[in-house]
Amino acid sequence: MKQMLLSAIAIIPLVVAVHAAPISYKLPEETAAFKPGPNLDVVQNNCTGCHSADYIQTQPRSVKSKKDFWQAEVTKMIKTYGAPIDDGDVGKIVDYLAATY
Image 1 (tube, rainbow, N blue to C red):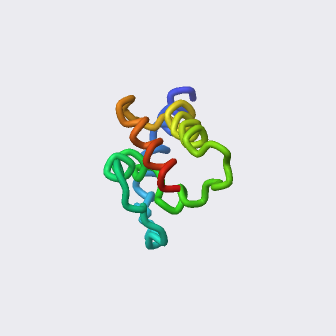
Image 2 (spheres, rainbow, N blue to C red; image 1 turned 45 degrees about the vertical axis):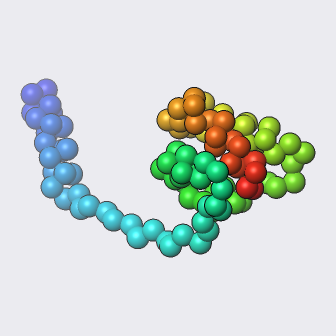
């Protein structure tokens, strides 16, 4: 009985895999673009792997210190979400965002 149950359990993933169909999604067109500025390439290389320019443009603009705000955001992306940003790029990203947004 135990052997029969184990055999049945082993077959389930095979049955599911046969019936699983690939899913594809059509993403919407970008509605925003990064503004030109120094270190734009660093921002595009590090940020667009996870989100679009739209996401950055929706962040609050009425903060006292833009640089402190963006430093906290970039740090959050690294520590909380695991963004693979090199230490040497952090300051460049923060400078670009603080100057541009």
